[in-house]
Image (cartoon, rainbow over all chains, first blue to last red; front, side):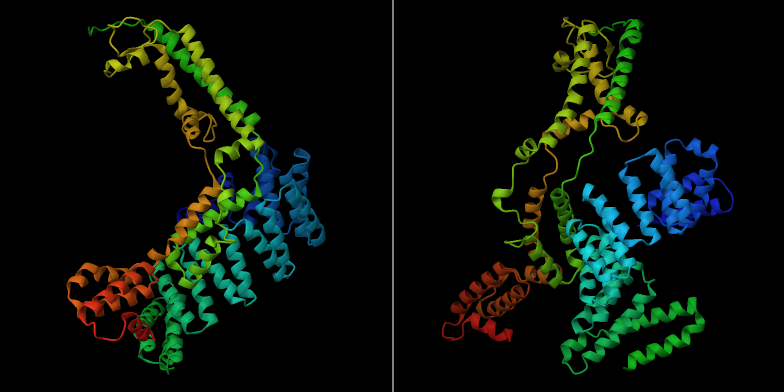
Length: 303
Length: 304
């Protein structure tokens, strides 16, 4: 995850570069370090450096990393001819290189020739069975071909070895949610919460999944996690506030026929607090929709 | 006799500075040689997996309060299960890390290379210093020292009356050895493989042993249950302290003890539950031996 200072620095450099100021090389280095996806800008300015032979030779040995970066950016923007040229240059300089082999396989994948790409990746995996990037490319291919079950299979195998990779857990959770396999998605989100408990995004997503699964216990847990999200974001998460209101009304509905103990779980104060906070926020940010919100909240409280 | 010796400036020109320059150059040479000789280690799948498992188990313990209890228990079982838990390493397999290191030829070769690349230049330079630069006072240390340092710092100087602050060039060599680390990180960038002092410290404890860490994680996780239900319940148990209840007379003590044992059972703290049951039985027999109901039965009845 990119920190706030780094993001600010990135945006500043981007503005500078786009408006014709210098600092292209620093921008490219920062993008490479942070692994951010700004392919159009990278492609445009990277190409301008590479085509100018004076600037290119001033880079020294970093020239080749720039070629690699521009090649990947070109593939992302679907300018495959540019990518092909970059890869050819790299191939001439570094024949028999695994890194260039990865780029070639990536190009085949970008062209959409799935079987050849599959073969190329398997060959690369034979040489180095523990390469994380190649495993992830296979998952991406399966996802792009529209075979989520195959992607899930590959991801599970990957996670059996690299179980501390939280990006992979996140990807798996999103695939499960898209396939409506909510229990498994809940498991993945639990893993994410365990690895990064201070990130409100995961608490929010977990609460959403729990609310979707339904059932009194899950609803109570979902409300806890919405509350945790509000705690972590300092009260700014509109989605979590709405989540609390919805959970509250759903719990009240489910526990209507039960005894007093469960009725205490309804916690009406929490719901009313969340409703007031929501109305305040809507008044600030979009007063036009305030009426809509008030009527929705009223219907929730009544039901 | 603390009189000031006047040291020839030629010593500075021909001893101190050349010695430092030579050490810097040798360091740079070693850096480039190590870069050339370095073989990229092929990561073993098992080692990678074990490392990641340890990270995941550590996250589980750290974030245990953030996930629902059922999921925590399920994961804990997955890790520390007796038969096929990931962290459970059966006793005979937990190898001595030293034996493992020597049996694996690649690792042994790597270690040999690293050690040699450190030992040989050090030995040669030390011998050179001793041969050429011994027998005279090289420098004066600005702070006073005790007599114990005489043998260490004044090897070539055979006069016992000279102040210990006047040292020979051997001490200058050692000073440079430990002090040039900062200079090397400036010239050679952060990745310099000639951090001798760190390497020497590492020689004592042999680095990362995944299986031992797994066993440790397993033990930590299986004991974690007691601490999981922290907060309200444990403070309740602490509040109802045992001594207080024992002194408070039989009937009140009995009901509180029953309450306590019920709490302890809810929190799944078996020792506390057993203790409270025993204590309540004792109080019960003290207070009203004619009463038929056994505290345990009362406990089970109130559970329903």
